[in-house]
Image (tube, one colour):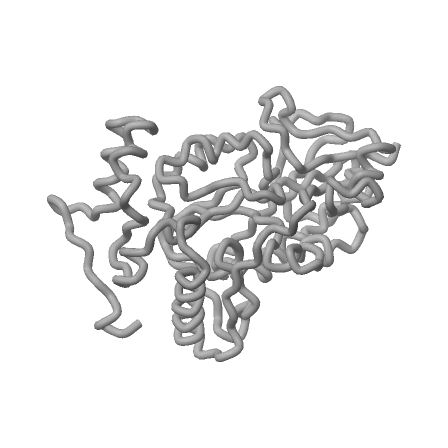
Length: 312
């Protein structure tokens, strides 16, 4: 990005303002920290002036939001050298509450969902990041102590079953409660989102999530220009800056347009069920009515919108 469009943020005693804010947060605690830094935005080594002075996205009117999207779209096109990139902000659909269910009887651990998530969401190619982990567990056990998400052998393995884990889009999300700057929130359709331009990277949400569903960008994602997914959303799969948190968002740039999540479309076994919990005729409601359904770590009271079931 050109020199005139960037501002260097001050360094305090040899540390960046991001590092200083983290120190303040640790000293003050969540509530006091929120009061101390609520007028501020994400701070990193350098930001554009427009980014630095942008209000909270939820506070912008439609004209201001359009200006932000146009700025991000222009920057994304310039960075990738492609003119087909669009950055949208699809709102929640009235009368819709999204939910996911996984049929553990047919999931065979092939990992196609992990790869689809990686490509759909413009994840860093060097670290092979994804929002989904597929856990391999001993058959007959639901204890996670022996879970393995790094297996490389042929699947399915004898006496094993497989459990994909990602953000559970909780109705009582602990990650939202601990964010000191309100950079993450739950939308009306049940999706918990992150505003990458507001996040300060304190990682409180990562620590609070009992499902290990949050990811921290240690560096700016590297995605070859020819592999960039050009269909991008402000709160979903646009390429994230370094130093911010991210997570599964149910592919809201797809699902809010009536499409299915990329991970579901890629699943070769039909293990994934996605739909509207408020629609009594939806497939997801049929699963909840007729299958043996359970949620992970139910005792924590997070009330997730992500379910598991067996055929038998």
